[in-house]
Amino acid sequence: MSIRFDRVSKSFGTKRVLDEVSFDVKTGEILFILGRSGMGKSVTLKQMIGLLKADSGNIFVDDQEVTRLNENQLAGVRQKCGMVFQHPALLDSLTVFENIAFGLKTPQFIKRQGGPLPSEEIQRRVQQKLSLVHLSTDVLERFPSELSYGMQKRVSLARTLAPSPSYLLFDEPTTGLDPITTNAINDLIHDLSKKLQVTSIVVSHDMACALKIADRVLVLDQGKILAHTTRAQLKLSKEPLIRDFLSETLALLPPEERAEARAEVTAT
Image 1 (cartoon, rainbow, N blue to C red):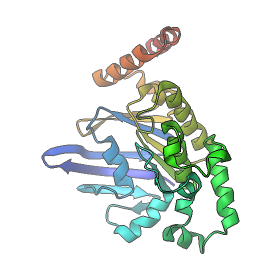
Image 2: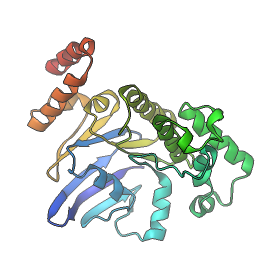
Image 3: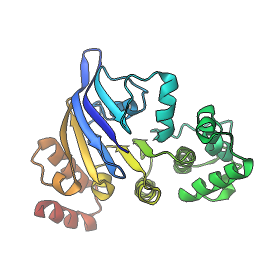
Image 4: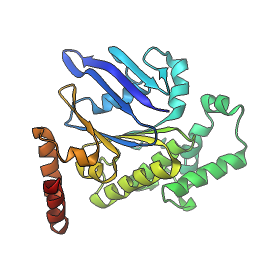
């Protein structure tokens, strides 16, 4: 299984955010898509599941060309791709249990399963996914408004995991979080990707996290791919924008970590 972009272009009015972009996502890897604001990172992610349509080019998910699918046909692709949006987007009128179970009761999921899941199996899956994001069953009967923002993010992730997608798509998953919670969410993305053996694509501004957990990093700028490489090779880049990203990352580190990280970047 894989995702592939072949000469994909996308414009909004006169602004071309993607200009014949081509890349692939390897099965089982964690790919970070980095770049400045407005450079097409989230647009790229949304095109994978048909939330936005490419102007030209082809996008393949498991060798299925998605750019020409209608809404009914896209439902099957979206079952494979779990999307974690920038904000938790939980349903306020539903409990945590009902939010996580929501995707297990959709017509698309029931059709894929060949019938509805027994209530006991839904209960088991909800509790299992809650455990994976390090939340206890104590929160199951609570409503989103009763949870901290960081806990809401975890519930949102558990909801995405419930239908067992093959791909996890994260759109700025640490926006609005404090540094401690940010690190916890980033570690969670890594651990879940490896434990569940899923392919993860993370749109982010967080170069520090990319250098910590990404298998490969794709950098977008002015509609083009500036780099698509491993963490180690990224540190060798002479591109000014990438060097700026690296410098900003070092500046944000605690003093005790900064010297070590700077030495590592310089050595590469």
